[in-house]
Length: 362
Image (cartoon, rainbow, N blue to C red; front, top):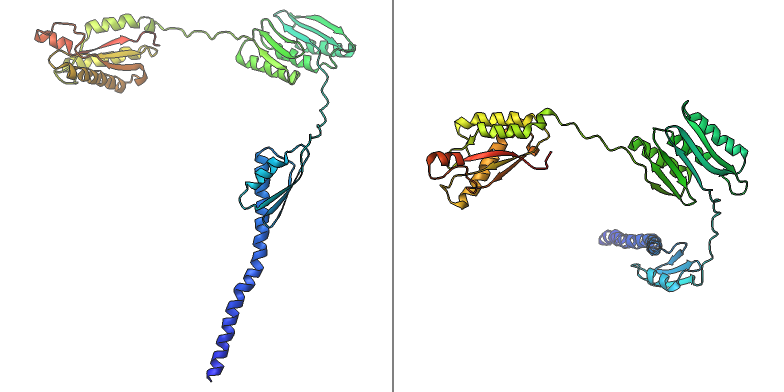
């Protein structure tokens, strides 16, 4: 009976040892294949990063063989692939010498020089064309855009050898220039298209420039077209008189503070409300709120107190509907008294804020 028990145990032990061996035998080739693919891909990526294209990489284990086209330095290729982590050895085939020049593309024939112009009374075309048919095609396009009061200034000549082969380029520019009024022209000199004159707006300017670029692909566009300056906004009567009304307000209405605080006294609170109404009458103006103090405190405490007073009035004006961006609060401490600090009345007058227009602001 003991022998019968031990035999299955031995069998199971042998099976347990055999399974890892079988798995290893199956997985190692797959892993090796995956490693070779990975090394090949990373080698190609490294070569492309150095601007080397057209190479072929074959990896056996961790040894790489690289075939490169003529004109590629084998030493550079070897150094690049040697630097790929996991590669053990590198052999380079091919490369060296001078690469064969690739055939140059057939250049499009040069376009003859031409000019298309517009005035309030006429459309002008000055261009050589290869034959009468092209000339008539251009004239037909002019007819489609001429109004009853315009004339065709025809300066088209026939030049079978060097003239424009068709009406495409000139026709596109005729239609683009026909928009709007005034003098404008498009001139092509063989390399550059120069746009000059006046057009009614930026949209027309962009349309003409696009038509010019499309008419002669690759040409340099020198866009010198001008558009009218935007009209200056009209100044309302309220804004024209704002400075004088603010000066009158300052003479009649003071904004005074309780001693040592940034609290507006009761008599001055209606003045802040009137100041808000005055400011809202001219939305374009920007105003400085200047805070001041008497001389009862030290200069070190007077300046921050004056700044808090200016900030307090600014906050109240904003709550009353004046945009914050129009208001600049600044404190001046006790530096600019309007009355003598030797009397109670003088000190009260100096505990104030003043409103003044910021110069150059609008």
